[in-house]
Image 1 (cartoon, one colour):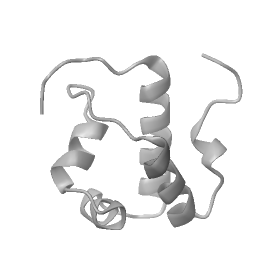
Image 2 (spheres, helix red, strand yellow):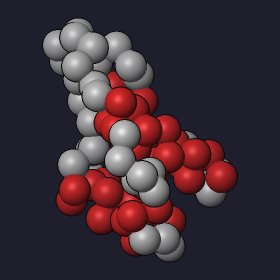
Image 3 (cartoon, one colour):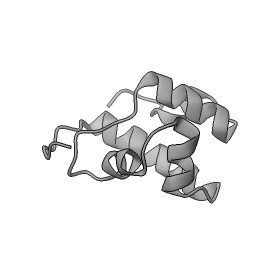
Image 4 (cartoon, helix red, strand yellow):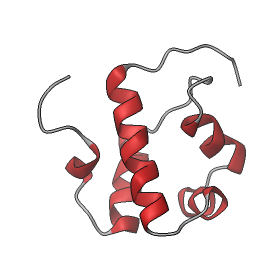
Length: 80
């Protein structure tokens, strides 16, 4: 994966919220990767600010199902 910090403020917020839900549910990065049918390194790259990888809408929809929440729970109430 290419190293380049190109994650926006909103990307970092969404990634942080997903990680918060993941940790609260006691789900490892490996388990999350399995649930999303992605590699462990992909999840690690998403959670690292050093890489460009980020969740897309399809990922967020799958995550909302997994965590039993609304997709909007991953977004801030007000625009950033």
